Image (cartoon, rainbow, N blue to C red; front, side, top):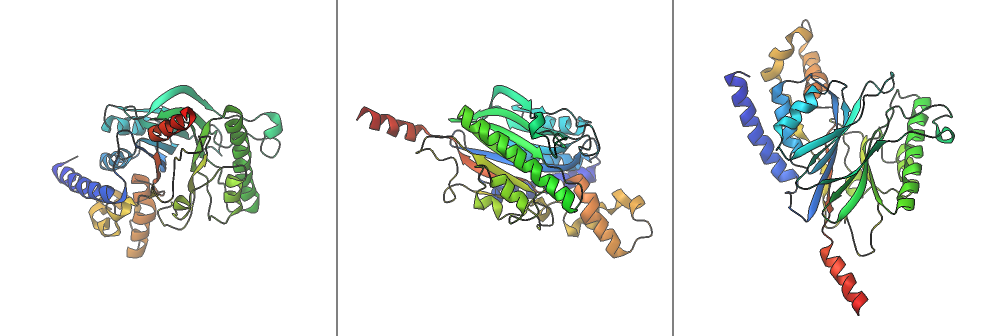
Length: 336
């Protein structure tokens, strides 16, 4: 980057930090876990370094984040991780073959000073009797990893549900993928007596949609603090979700609507704003030749900036992970 770009990036990072301080709870050493999910649009080696600094700043405000739409080319992800604190590490799936999967990977990025990997990771494949429409695996294979944060042990599963088109056939396929996955994971949670968290891009248009009903059908719950937030850049759709199927002692609460927070982080309030069009126009002049002012504005807002950041917003939740008082109270009652 030249001097002008560096100065702009530094100034924007300062503004971004200020917004993050207002919108996201502060990290704690042992009390809470900041968990997030973010579909970063076609995330490969295709962004300006300036944009990667902004993405890294946002990612660093969480303890653990699931990322969807990671490209087969890992250079972008690897550079992002290099910008984070050395304590950060990541897991990533193999790339998905076939047109439905788009060659995508899914990843977990996590702060090792807060999160420990519990030696279990794998992709979910379906047995013959569970195949989608009797013949298909998931368009993009769900990815499960076991983690522990403080007292809280859990299996985290990330997903990018098939989208296809707006046809009723593709809508039913999305619903079937979600229904099949939640059915399988709910049985595992019960059998293993283990807490499961399911998160990612479910391509759920509205919270009243049948796809949301499929998500909650088998015992997974989505806090209302998450449901109320559309997660696309246009703030119209509820594509991304975080759902819980928890196996804890009765007096141990991971999320309370009254005590913990959840939401989306709208980076467009600070960076790549509508007012920044003239600043960045020089980087896509070849794409807007002959276009009207309105067409140029639309291209910048709907295409160019979404490939620099994303067309999705990070969705996050604050979880309680220190159960030491509850454990002592339980011991006290048992002792009598």
